[in-house]
Length: 252
Image (cartoon, rainbow, N blue to C red; front, side, top):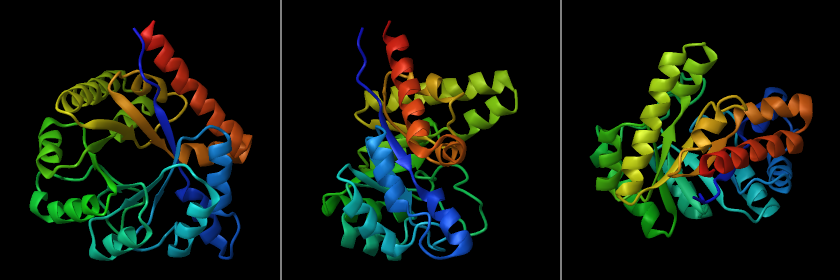
């Protein structure tokens, strides 16, 4: 049995976080995007938050000019963000939940509970030729909501799985991994393209990458952290190799 390869999207948000801690232009997220692609990234992801805590508006054109791979803009379902997305026309937009007081995205978008609110954004983005994905929990109700909304892609939130693993709770780790696998299988069977991400590390990526239905992983914070010690290109290359190994082992 052969499995299609899993694409790796590298999220460069936290290069901008470091830059913004001191102000100025260094380190440059666009340079990070270029290095990530040179190391084997299939795409570049970034989250333009309403509070602009990391990526800034002017970064979008710089990143687009630095690389030719697909760009994936993460954003809240907000009119300001929609206008920016329609102006810049990235390859993809991933709608995510966003709260100003959170440190990072906490949990998946409630596509079921906010169906009517989200529907307009999905339709506007699709009408502009932008691929739309929804960042959701690995839950059947959210899968059904994504289908109802007409989003062609879902990104399954892997944060709870990663947190359980690093806490040493192996029972919870297995439960969350099973939930991700079941959601991936259910979504793919109904025609959704399945992505996954949040909190993935060298230690947690392979079981997720081995799930046959997953087509893309988006990984950022861990890789930027590892880049401090290894350099960005070696960090991305190592992650790329682990994803490939997981795929090969799953197909054997």
